[in-house]
Length: 192
Image (cartoon, rainbow, N blue to C red; front, side, top):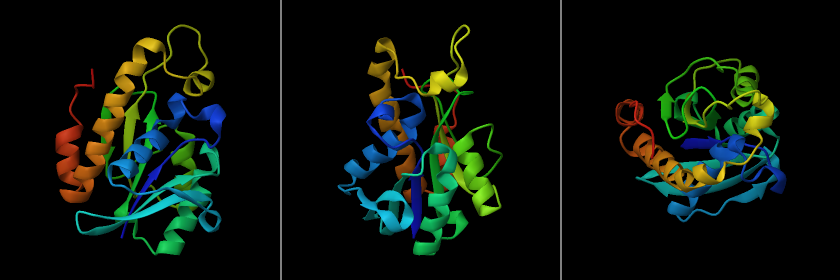
């Protein structure tokens, strides 16, 4: 069984924020696969189960808020008995230009508090993650304020394409494996 976890903050206030692009990508992937996300209090998440490319897949959106994402991920792993090699976490990344994707087998949190929470809860950084570039703020804007802000009008037209490309990457991870997804989606170009 595979687990795809989109990181974000629950609630309408955060729905269209940059920090929630992980949620948005996993929602789009679920919709593409006709999977319906439903609240599951036992794992503090919205979850959907599906069969994709002949594999059982759980898609999840933690309801614990970004900084406590690890609480939900640990519950998901325990409930569904998922091996760390079968997990992919989807999140935003300030250090990547808007529209650039980077999928990795493992690594540090890179300062991302949601990833850091997962590392702390699991006691390891040995899980794959797909980082979606949201770019750095211009000028004196605080990073915390920036990630919680909505995309600007001129960026919104690209966000749909970025989310679709992210869903394509999730498909590649499931059907072709991590190495193929890395080869196809870690290129320098970004979605225009």
